[in-house]
Amino acid sequence: MSIKDSALRFASSLETELIQIRADQMEAAEALTVRINGVAGNLKEMGAKVQALHEEVQGVKASQAQMLEILIDIQRRLP
Image (cartoon, rainbow, N blue to C red; front, side, top):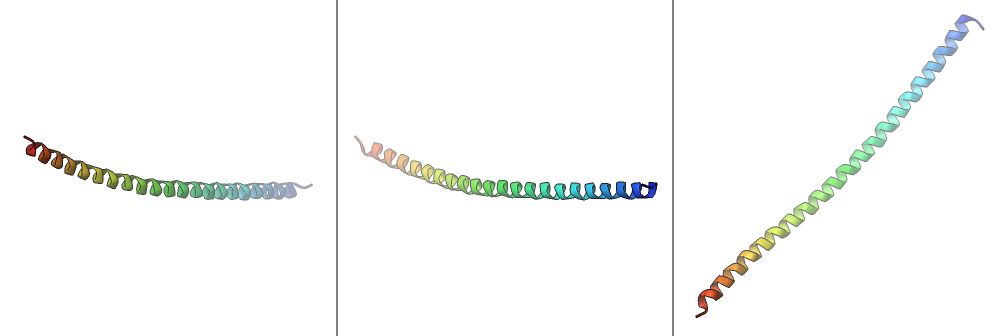
């Protein structure tokens, strides 16, 4: 085998390895993107739940204020 043949064979094997590395990188990037999108979806879902809980708490606070007013009114009417 000549030096030229050896060099071509070596260059070809390097090219093949670089192509495989690039393919692996693209696959890893795609998997990471899928995971990030999944996390983003979970965060949106949690944000909606937090908002719903916030609204519920606000409703309870308004109810407590109304109950307090009613109790104060009842106390005032008692002898």
